[in-house]
Length: 183
Image (cartoon, rainbow, N blue to C red; front, side):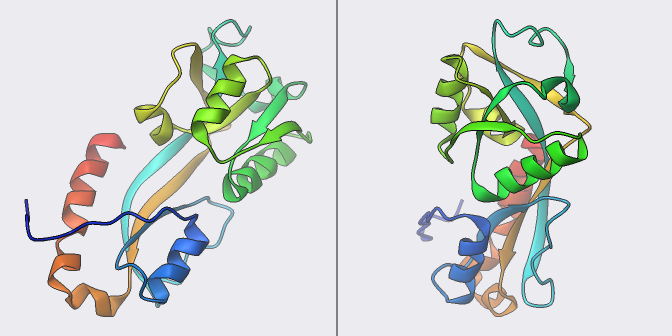
């Protein structure tokens, strides 16, 4: 829509991406928070809420619970798990604690393709954001809603002074538009 604008992508976990924003290394950061984690300082950042993203349990097709529409976390106490990035893992550990168990985590990786491949190989099961599964899903796994409900909030962040940059000011609206189709 704006051919003169050059977009570059830097991948970083939310705390690092906000540090990059403050340091002037990027103009906008898209990140996520979980309910039990503190939100970034809204006095310091302009926050554009984008969507709420359900966390789902990822199972191999032949798993006994794969036919259920939703799976209660307490039904998964004896499973072996593959855990994700540090923030996702912390949220997962908190949910398991609330469900009354400590998960047996065999592998930890923030590579979503590796997580799915390990699940399909029968190494363990995982929890994964629905947003990831909307664009990358191994054909031999299923995802189910997790109960109790678990989700993360996805938002765009910028510094108030960056909103004065014409190219930066153009970005929030397309992000909202695309997010509305995903959330």
